[in-house]
Image (tube, rainbow, N blue to C red):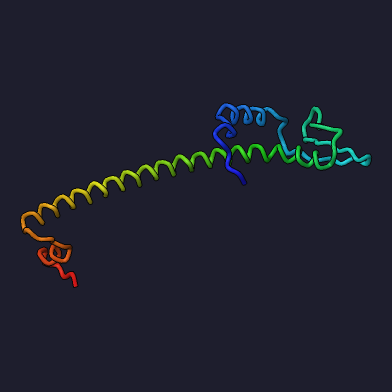
Length: 138
């Protein structure tokens, strides 16, 4: 599956318009109703009139009848995905901040090592530092 470009992605306004259309549609579970003549209809159990759409092929009736549940489910999934993206972006930001902090600490330690090397007049290694601190580097 190809990734959508920024221009192809739905805007918040488009998603809201889809949500409003879904909420305004006839309530209830829509069902395909197959006729003997090869035409199908989509019906909803409502008091005033139950036909949502008619005069179509069976596969269109199946698609339209499922859209009453599918579209709200897809909108909920988009919302959940957007929330997850926001959480991941925040987590990533924290990781980048921690990385930058660690890089700064490495630079600080390198500067200290340079000072130690200048004072001792030698190429002090981690083994020397560990030994000087009372550690066992072997």
